[in-house]
Figure 1: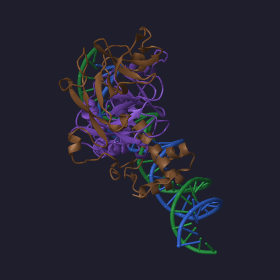
Figure 2 (figure 1 turned 30 degrees about the vertical axis):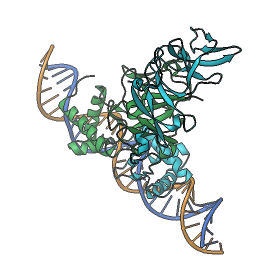
Figure 3 (figure 1 turned 180 degrees about the vertical axis):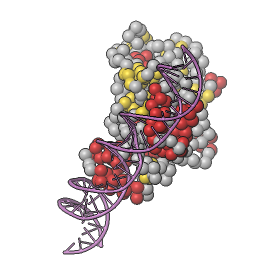
Figure 4 (figure 1 turned 135 degrees about the vertical axis):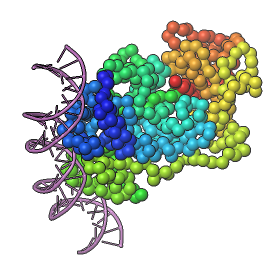
Length: 221
Length: 221
DNA sequence: TTGACAACCGAACGGCCGTTAGGTATATAG
DNA sequence: CTATATACCTAACGGCCGTTCGGTTGTCAA
């Protein structure tokens, strides 16, 4: 990752700020308007910033700027739907009513209101993480994590975040499904490692991390 | 906030899912492509969904869909209730403060006051069993139950009882130690079966069952 | 002096953008 | 029967979108 010039850095900073304010990356011309440049000049900069690895230009057309390392998800302040569900959780000093969102299948949004199947009040001592953190519970389907002691039907408590560190167990969106895998960052891609010797790792240039598993639980009988 | 029709909800769900996957809301035509509709039909839906207050259409042009989370706070069961005497005693209608007794060793009475290392408040939904049942938490040592997804260091929630049914996972006193094993009654004896193919079963003419495992939990990080 | 790099410009391309207008068909309520 | 609402359609508008092309100016190192 080469270094950016001063100008490039100013542009990148502004783009990040814009995204924070609006929840969306700016268009090329919006950047140009702010810096008093032609769209083609901005485009030159973006190409260079991309070549140096600080942004990616997606295949989605309009506004598909991505800033790796920053939130994939909208504004910190005004943010998106998931928050409402999470914030509705009863919160006191000792415990937290964590929403359970069921087995998440194709295309169904993780935290839409109508997916909340119930809430489980969990002790703070089981939830590593800062005070404001947000959590949800997911029922795991499949055997891909058996060797990590997560069986088919187990529930995992997930702390909402869109980054992860190497080796952490994450919930990530792959195409249309939420999967639970171990997360490893490699050069230029990400490896999602199942804990099952009969399954191979999944590689992707980017994944939408939804959160990291902080706790797993299972009931018997 | 009026209710959405089924179709409208499906669209909203997909939009939220799209945003989670790509970090950006979809365009009108992207929605249309997924549902096989013309862009104008999608637009109709969006207008209605907006009128019902579930989304906002920003002034930014392309992709400026916003999903305000706020409003719907239909805070379900578990919202802030005043601390009652019952709760102080560790028992209310929804949860129970379950004592943790650590790695239980020789001959020491399981639930003596001085063994209690702490309490974890657990949701009733995780505790199968009648209202008056007693529970405790045990930290499991060793690998004897790995194939049942109980790893070294995991905690199990145990319902106090001194009988068990075939196949249940029990806490039993063997000589001077508490072990966690699967319980089977055979003619004239009892078999305690580990969930680890490298270990053999234990046979005993009688065992002191302390309780059955109703829940297991593990924290990460 | 040559050449690479940064930092711009204007003009244009084809296409996708949100949006409007005007229509059809179906269902449900008064 | 009428009215209202949902759920779509085709066709088009004006404009913004990312992107390309060919150019200019300056700076710094070889």
